[in-house]
Image (tube, rainbow, N blue to C red; front, top):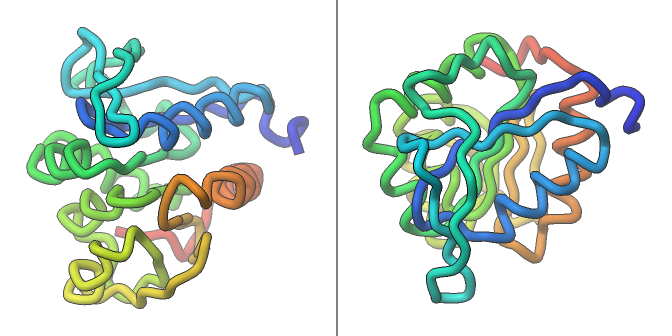
Length: 187
């Protein structure tokens, strides 16, 4: 698999309050497979993680959101946490960035509360997805077909429920990234 991923670039879009493992594990896993990973955030000064109900480490930001271009990446990862996606889903630049991946048919992976951003980007209607249980009704009200599974994949859209699902999430993200463009992935 790692040979198929060499030369690929993945953006992780996050801001303060992201669930630490949901950024750190995909970042580490993808880098271990030879993927170049950039953390994208509204502010280039660094973003602070949330870990088990407490503030944690500050993570470096590689590219400020207003400088990031979806065309420079092969896939997008949206970590959860409650604070992070709640901030991103009202940021028009973030929504445009997310939407550009769907328009280009590129893989997008969201975990936990991360699908909140996808709802506001207008890309979940008719899609099979999962999420943290408290996001279920939001997804269903936006037209998604929700299921309680550790990982759900629908034409390049990878979703998982919680940090316990990270192994399956990362495995399926890598598979979708290796496959490349998905015609069923659309805005």
